[in-house]
Amino acid sequence: MIISARGLRKDFTVSRKVGRFRRERHVVSAVDGVDLTVERGELLGYIGPNGAGKSTTLKMLTGVLTPSAGEVTVCGLEPVAKRTTLARRIGVVFGQRSQLWWDLPLEDSFALLRHIYRVPEADHAARLKQCSDLLGLDEFRRTPVRQLSLGQRMRGELTAALLHGPEVLFLDEPTIGLDVLSKQAVRSFLGEVDRRGDTTVVLTTHDLADIEKLCRRLVVIDHGRVVHDGTLDELHARYRSRRTIVADLDSPWPEGLTLPGAVVTAVEADARRITLALDGMTAGEVVAALAQAVSLRDLSVQEPNIEDVVAKLYRDES
Amino acid sequence: MAELLDTARVYGRVLRAQVRSQWQYRTSMLLEILGSTVVNGLDIATVFVLFSVTGVLGGFTGTEVLLMTALSAVSFTWGDLVAGSADKLREYVRSGLFDSLLLRPLSALLQLAVITFALRRIGRAVQGLVLYIVALCVADIPWTVERALFAVIVPISGAVFFSSLFVAGATVAFWWIESGELANAFTYGGRDFTSYPSTMYGGWFRDLFTLGLGFGFVAYFPSLVLLGKPDPLGLPTAVAWGSPLVSIIAACLATVVWRFGVRHYRSTGS
Image (tube, rainbow over all chains, first blue to last red; front, side):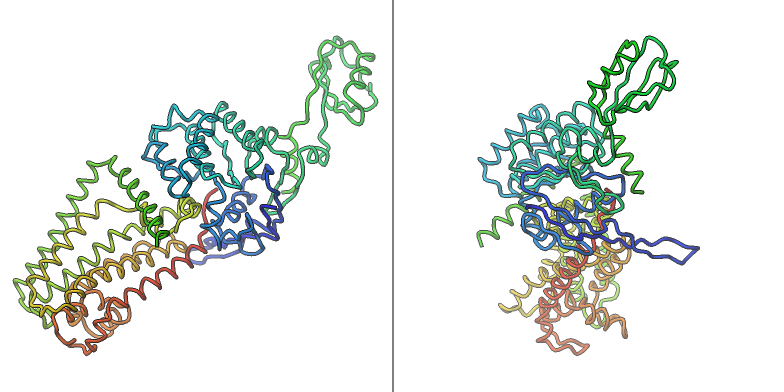
């Protein structure tokens, strides 16, 4: 167990102006009793709507914020008390907070980080080469960071976070604002890090493709509390999201016709296009029954959409 | 010891990187150095003009007061060079950039000092040092080995005192972002206070600043030690010799305040 949090809470005092001089102070819990256990080598997706407490949790796990209550250890260390020791053993990419030297060439940042983290030269060179090959850093390693595109900078940040060989990698929205190609580069890189299995990854994201491609385990947080902890499939099962069949027909769908094991959820285009949600039968059985009942022109089977599930989840909880 | 040297080397590298970054904007920086040197030079000229007119200030002769002014200047400018940018902490706290300091395996305070290091302050610091050397030469000092040693230690201790003040003042930003002017009242106010003999001031104000807040131990008491004069206000000479201890206390207090502040960091934004 590399990360453990029990009853983790963070309260902020917010003061609001009431009238001209009076201020009203009240306490808001950004994180409100989170229990979380992460095993070595896991890749965990930590998701939730804006303001749910994702970043605040990450900041408590990395020793940036002091928890208001609860117990937390990362790599067996208490983050705030052992901040500098822990810093050598974790890597962090916070999308909005650069670890790089803005006015210097990218490779200067890497060289500085080698000294800051006291990484032996050979280890540093090997890791840098690995990242460089996977992320294609060579074309812009001599460019000052301020002139890099967001996608290039993010590749630099990822490298910077991994050069000291961290046991845990924390990523706060690493794909936010990136173009499609950069997103894919970051995603496949993280997939590679995950496959090697020696780095535990905790990832917050709003990007559902990140979740589908990367996260075997999902922890969903809302209003500072964990509302789901499990696999993506379990999330689908829990919210009864189903596969659907969309069929184009030669003749209009006969009104009132029902098929066993499927529910008609939409009839469109002069009743020549229908959508069926699978309900207890396989797609094959439903398609066979459908082909007998009507004349089919075209057909597609669609996987449940995580976007819908998450939207549903967020709506439910708020 | 080797460990300590290694750590110092790491900060040295980060500092050099910072200077290299600033060198990218060298024209603007050189102009700033020039500007602040000129402005500061005018400040010093004011002191000379003042002495040429009055002759005696608060019971001290021109060269004696010059020693106090110079000691205050060297202390302040070197403290300013080391920690004067600490007030940048406000921006780091407001933008949440302070996070990135906490994520590295280094002291957040030293990192802040190093990454906000402003090369342009060097002009003033050199000026302060030159003024101090001149003041030591022209003042009527009964030199002994102890006094010579004291003359070397005292500007360092004064710089530590002002650095502590800068840090403690900046730390307020953890609770209250708009804290800049309050801190300036003590840092810049302190510099002005220490530039003249404490005997010039009166009543509770003098006692509060000279003894209560320790400003007397930056320039006034050390100058008396160097000049071999008893304190007209009655502080025993032995205590005046202990001026550097006051800076150590100030540094400890500033560190405590800083640590406490970091625990209250709220890390705004996502």
